[in-house]
Image (cartoon, rainbow, N blue to C red):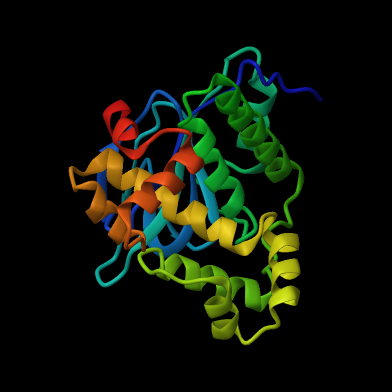
Length: 260
């Protein structure tokens, strides 16, 4: 079976903030893919509601009506990716998704794809066409994995889950690797090996991806000054933040905001 990468396209991959509460019933002209990092919500597709939580993956097809609601006293942190498939060239992929995952059905994937979605977010928003094509290729490979392996929902090592929970809840805080391993009560070298083998990148690189994805969302959706955005993702020095953001996105924060 062969899928044609040049036809399938990832338009964007966005990290929706914890402040996200409710979206009225709506539809899109693209596939909408969801991967939940933390929290819980109710996801409704054409009147059929499903509870979703950390580690869940689900999607809707173009022009399918859907809505989402976060319960009181809760929150939801998730990546949403918008994908276009060619009716002819990507027919096999579309059919496999429908047959093996199912529109509106919830697939429990666990924590192992957090780093992938952070990378998809960064690359899909790049001005470099090669980066955007790489993001489309990575998304296609992810979907292929999901459709051929129905047992990806196994839980990761408890220390990895604890580390990811810490990172998600401390996006707005400044911390280093020593503080993280102290919180976990693990040997540093052992933890780095364990995290990299489970998630695919070093722990602090993943933590920075999470912070920069949150910052990118703030730059796109608010008019807060750069210093305020920097502070909300744990940077006291907005010049240092600007440098790290440009390394992450390839674009300075101010220009990134203008392009958004």
